[in-house]
Length: 362
Image (tube, rainbow, N blue to C red; front, side, top):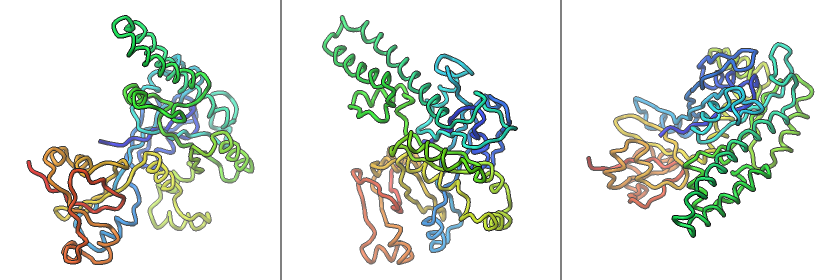
């Protein structure tokens, strides 16, 4: 199952440029609203020091990093929840992703039009957040109407559902995203079933011009508005796109000349990994070393299913080593001799940095 992070925001804030920088996909990025109509998709490899270290020790013929899928979703405008700017279609694209990265424009450029004719990242944040809330509110009110019609057949069960629905409607009307509401088991089912937008994990990307003296004030205001719950990543997306397109040696020299520590977008990718609540585990089989992403708390059979569905269906056991042990002692045979090779069953919860081999029946 692919894990998707949706890139959302107002038109002309740098979403397509961000995708280009992340993936070298060269999605069209122009200076007029709604340049992007269909969603653009790119897959981004995650830089992984453990994977590189394991490759040095194990010397596999093939190395496959873990990846996250980024989806560039066309710009939302005021009234999107009512269909403005093809809003219903774009909101539908957001429902398909696991988490969202909200890009806000923190740069001045007279050659890049803003759909509202002004630069105000806080206002942009509020517009998009409001449209997500309104779309969820419409869905919950529609669900309430349907459940009311079913009340004669099962009044007790429907009454409890209506109580839950009213609680969510009240939160949405108060402007509270559902990701900030403590949800019960039934409500969590609705969130998943209806892909409620304001319940999705979110981070904010402040797209800045590092030479603009107003940058610090804009970023500070964004952090004040979103509070401590939402991570804020600051990036100069245009510079990152230019850097990403350079050959590695030229890129390293340019980064040094700019006084940067490196490409800033990997911090964004890592923030996306944390936002999705993912850990990394590794497999080595048929001389191929591969990193995999897995939601925290998943069991060995569920992790095996990430590799192949047959492995989950026919799961027998999982042999597990830690990255640190493997790097220290060099190979599986040495770990087995030292008693550091663990044999885990169906209830084992896979941990960060596990190096696994799955035994299964076909």
